[in-house]
Figure: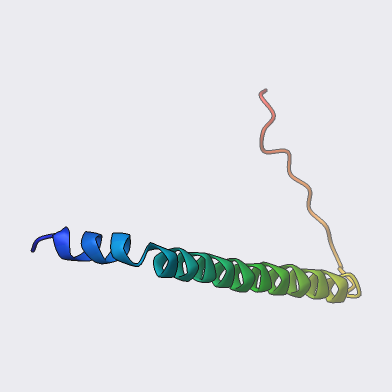
Length: 67
């Protein structure tokens, strides 16, 4: 398939193409930011709830020590 048709239309309507590209980039950034915030909030809420759980035993291992 020839690429001349899409290239011709992009250069013919470059203002429309630029506006569409900027709109898609802003929308993607907006929704990605929402996703990051939701993940951070969920992690914070889970960690807050886990702090209330009492433990019976704790194990600490030093796995990176060279003997």
